[in-house]
Amino acid sequence: MEKKLVKVVPGILDIEDPEADLQEALFSLEEETLLKLDRNEATVTPSPMVYEALTKSLDRLSLNRQPDNRSRKLRRKLAHYSGVNFDNISCFANTTIAVDTIARTYLQPGLDALVGWPCENSIADYIGATGARIIFSKHENSFEPKVEEFAAGMTSKTRLIYLANPNGISGSILTESEIVFLLSYAENAMVVVDESYFEFCGVTVSELLSKYPNLAVLRTFSKAFALASMDAAYLMTDERNLKYINRLGCNKAPNTLAQVAAESAIDDLRYTASFVRIVNESKKMLFENLVRMGYNFRITSANFFLLRVKDPDSLVETLTRNNIFVNNLLDYPGYENQIRITIGTLSQTGVLIDILARQSDTQTLGKSLKTSAIRLKEPLRPIEESLVK
Image (cartoon, rainbow, N blue to C red; front, side, top):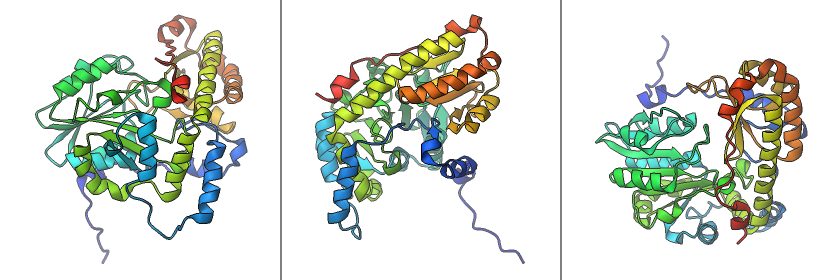
């Protein structure tokens, strides 16, 4: 008689199995032949100071001991970097673990979570696994969402609102005044603003933390700081919120070496600022060439752009054959013909442009559609300079 498996909860049944084929293909390639532009990770290695600090740490740290689950040294550096009080910061192994912890602190079956759409699938999965109902915000134009459209998705049971600013799929940004409106309107809900791309765009609402106890700001070291393989994330919110969030979160801190890497990355902000500057130069290079080739595209204020083409599957296959991996957005309604591509160095961008040029005759949508979709958002303030003040 066949034995039955233990029944899993509905929140897990709603999550699709992770795709392993792409990851297996990626890790079978030599790193120097690979151009990974699918997850918006940095396309350069971290600061040399990170490697130096890790090497020294391996000589003196006791790796048999648990890491500092309060990330005290890292939080002191983050307080100086962000201008937020030490007691208002908590560190996590990555952003999804941070979101999972926040969601489990505020949600349960019978409550609602409002999630800004489009949203990375992993984030929605973690929130949905709590058993709470997810309501995705509805927008007439997801590239230019209105805060009133977010508010329209709220119910009396809404306890958590998650929005990425900039959005990690569309690149759209809400202004500070719009987020203030949402914070005031949703005073009974925790509003989590994911600022994973802060270093690229310079947009933040961290100054609002002292005024709004229902605000939480989330950032990561996996993007501009080039630490995706040794990630760390940090949450900034009222310390009274952290009293409860940390009941789960303190067991989900970055490991010892990840904390060392993050601390060293903060010590070399000039390196990060230099990379941000290079990405902005690549944006200009992309803009000039994609216009010339007749592509329909949108360059965001983060470190990626969207390319709308006739046959995304064919273009993705062509790029993959050249060991360039990008993100086909076919799983997102309204984005079926769009590809999200991470922006890297000038030389990396040049390689990408060469292939896109060879595909332009079959992939462009025509000049009549080109200009209406072109958006080049420069950083709202000189982030390179603000990083090294």
